[in-house]
Amino acid sequence: MRAIITGAATGIGRATAFALNADCKQRTGEPARLVLADIAAERLAETARDLRAEGATVETVMVDLADPASAQTVVDAAQRAMGGLDALISNAGIIRLVSLLDMEVADYDRYFAINTRPTWLLAKAAYPMLKEARGSIVAVASVAAHTPYPSLGAYSATKAALLMFIRQMAFDWGPVGIRANTISPGSTHSEIGVNAGQARPAADRVGNNPLGRIADPEDQAAVIAFLVSPAARHINGADIAVEGGALTQNVSAMARVTR
Image 1 (tube, one colour):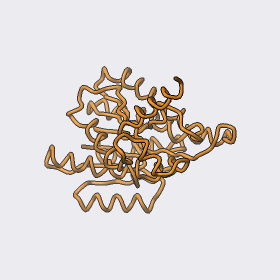
Image 2: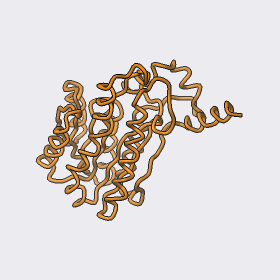
Image 3: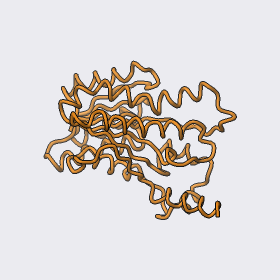
């Protein structure tokens, strides 16, 4: 398994790196080869060190994905380090609680510059390698792409746009063997999850979830590892909500309100 993972220093990205390595060793007897990208240099280095201790081959790239040139930098690093690519996991994202009335144009632009645009630029740059390998793309969206939440500003719109970008990739690139899918995490124990949940206490988020828990990053990573594995070879253009049934709960609540 040769993979790029963005937002790999912490949370879902870090957990995904470990999940891919474990899955690769189980399936092939060999560790994964990974290129990890993030803006947090120290924590990225820590993740890389921990993965190498488990046998993975790891290259790190410190980039700000808001810079359009950064996508090519990441893909070039993968080309040099691995000579090819089996999977692109576009996970990096930002969230800040702000109302639509208080949000500035700069906020809007940065949301889309980090949450949406890099997936397209990374996939476009990686297309030749992914085509050669008949590889897979997984982008991390959000339950917020499916239903509005308080004070998320443009965040929900960036994730909804991401869903359609991936569906378009699945449609356009499926014929050459490239699969493209998304996962939509709900409340998750991660830095971005903490930021998203500041508007609601953790007890409320747990209470509103049919499973009665907040997800761990490993819950999300397990689904990503499945989607890039041979077991998911006929899944393309799909979105998997990894949220314990929270969307169902929201729909039920809205139905009660409208009656």
